[in-house]
Length: 215
Image 1 (cartoon, one colour):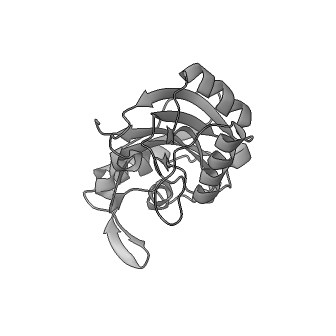
Image 2 (image 1 turned 60 degrees about the vertical axis):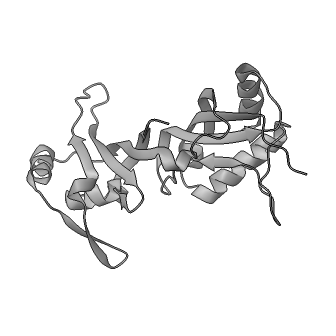
């Protein structure tokens, strides 16, 4: 007999270089293994094949790093947040690092349904002399037609902002882009780079923030 979960926690974490080329499903498995190593009483779904009740907010494309990923976890016992952070952190593999942890409503909206947008920082490997002109041209357009899965779509309304942060400390050329991340209306930073005439393989892309609607 399954009982209702006792606790729901939301973990904000970094996905660093050590897991840069680890895919979404493997990241989820890594979390499941870590939670079991931490000996936490995970809550399970009902049905023929029960599975742990955990929700990653949004898939992170392969090759990207992040400092703002989120995962919700349901537990069958209650713990202090300090205890949970300590136990989970000790069990996580290299490449995953907790930055914040909070308690949420047991029956609140599922995390993926709350994601509305995302902010990315793109670091270019080589400086582009006319980068500002390319950005200005992009922003001046009302429509930018791209192709995805052999279907045309308009990238421009999916880009909420695009700018060049001033960062002289590291002498690196960067872009900051805020993209829509709604079902059927998700912008991708690699598509923005292509539209700027740049190769995504000549850049490092990091998701810095997931934008959630109010619960």
